[in-house]
Image 1 (cartoon, rainbow, N blue to C red):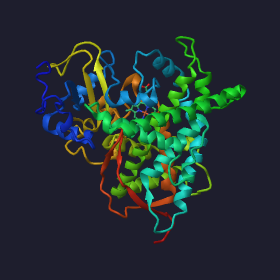
Image 2: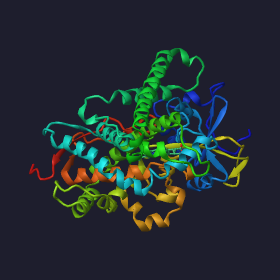
Image 3: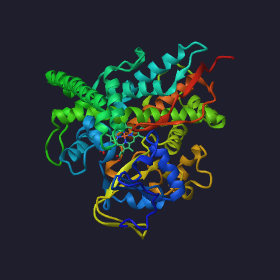
Image 4: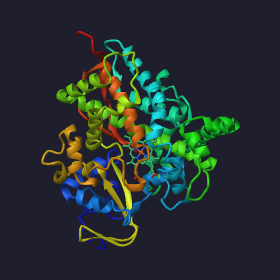
Length: 463
Ligand code: HEM
């Protein structure tokens, strides 16, 4: 076989390994396979090889952008139904990728974060207000509320739109359509006759996409009408409507702007909520970490709940940031990403990969590689992200935001928003693990805790 000596599990005729992969939890299944087969192995996806890499040394080689580029295949390619040629689902060589990348660096840069801070604060206040008003027997659905936070924050900072998720039982119709679409996309595996049993879902998908596009197009058109206002608004939409790509002198067209907005909502809500939920889970299970986190929040933000945290204060929440980064290590919300060699390659001095071979970087497994994280890689320890520990570690051992120029453009946004929210939560609440919840990961486009409910009480509550 061309892929020898890369290990691989036994295959079945025609479908190869496709049907033996757990459809509800393929990422966790691949993680178990990595434990059995090692840092690199391949699966036969109905004739097409999928090479799964999780060893830190190999990932380090694969992170060389002169040799490997992002590959938009499998479910990510199907996400193009919603994301089109927006940044996340564009091929690197599509003209709109570099154009949008150049234009969007500014509204995702550090300076822009300062201008989003008031809007982020607005939404974080809605979350803590909701929790403050809970009765002693009310439960918090952590993933639901952090998803509401993340969505509303992207909506407000992105294009001055309020989903008002904290004022409704269900999600906004746009979000419902988005979630349904992503579900259908993830259920689609390109199997023979699959179109038959997915027929109704595919019809809904077409309707949902049309609805989402119409809503976003309307927001863009509205903004164009008040052309004078477009420059004034300091949100991402304003930046997209006025920004010029220095390389080509061109601007983004309205269809591409729509795809970017859809993309921010796809990329920006499940991931951020997954990170926050897992961080809260870890705090419940590690009282000594929680204690240090309370100390930092009390020192940096203070105890007066009427004084709003400033941008500067959030940047000083360094231990909180370490907690978030460690949560991203153990439970990376985007648990894998796809790349392909630009020409025929050899990695690890012996594994031959033909040009274009689909290679999946299995981040969840990479983040528990004992050669980097030591003999007990499953243990939650924010000291892994002390300044010294970070400096001493190989750069490509921690990849929750992907790689190189195709890495997450929203990472600074997600980290600021989350440090602010977690800081405000800890300023106010005791967290109670009423169900002694044990981590159970639900896989969609992302991974996040399934059925994670807690209770919260005010910190000054004597009970
Ligand atoms: C790309 C993770 C938050 C927008 C990515 C990639 C990862 C990732 C792994 C690379 C995907 C690949 O290589 O195929 C995360 C995580 C987040 C987060 C873990 C939160 C903790 C956000 C937010 C936004 C965002 C808040 C926007 C508001 C994007 C975009 C891309 C991207 C536009 C594509 C960048 C490009 O290829 O040019 N993200 N993301 N992400 N993310 Fe995020």
